[in-house]
Length: 301
Image 1: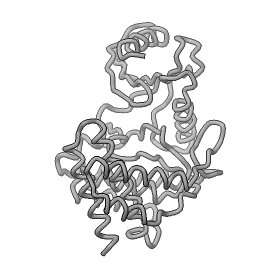
Image 2: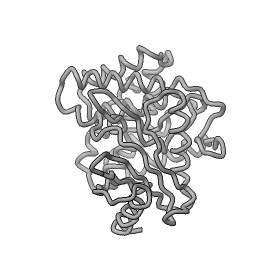
Image 3: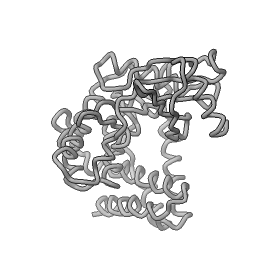
Image 4: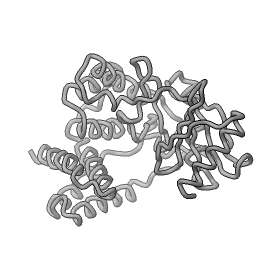
């Protein structure tokens, strides 16, 4: 579907579900078309699948229902048509739990931004305390195991790609490929993409954690390391420290975390580098490259 077609579909869904049209604001979304639906009496979030199977939306609905039962702050689902019976395309409509994210508060150092970062840490720790019945990617039909060999091959290919773009050297890529990766296996719920953009704020506190499409059951320290790199790439040191303090107030990290999980942090830095470069934002790749080199130096030191 084109962007115009998706917007027309969003208008039709509004009329079908709410009986009237709304102001429709596209919010992007690489996997699903996402819109904010603004009515005079309230705001809602619409996600429209770009494929008939709607596997990502099915997964998100399953997880939102699970998390709500455990008292986690997540959006409530208001309408669901994952079989595409209403408009010929699967969709979910969720309540809007706020229009600002923690990321919007990180430009200025205030007591509120420090408090929100600590809340982020506490929330991630709470998520990690949820023990699942299996390990792997979470799907409505069950757990899909992740092949550690294939996973490692993808990370090595990632390093080679970044080196091929001249963003790191071939020697740095080779050094990364020689590093041992922590075991993926685990049964903690992991968000998979947890950072300040995924934490919605309302009335000065985090009202919901959103975008659960990458969630899996795994080694929670890997999930923490991914978030740490995100925050180190754009977050001032005192706010990062507040996040870590919040997490450690609820949950401990493995004894060898600082060194053993450096390869995970390097891999995430490379992933951020590729993300920036493939979107034509090479200038923004400088920070994750700087982090990658700092982690590699720390490992070698």
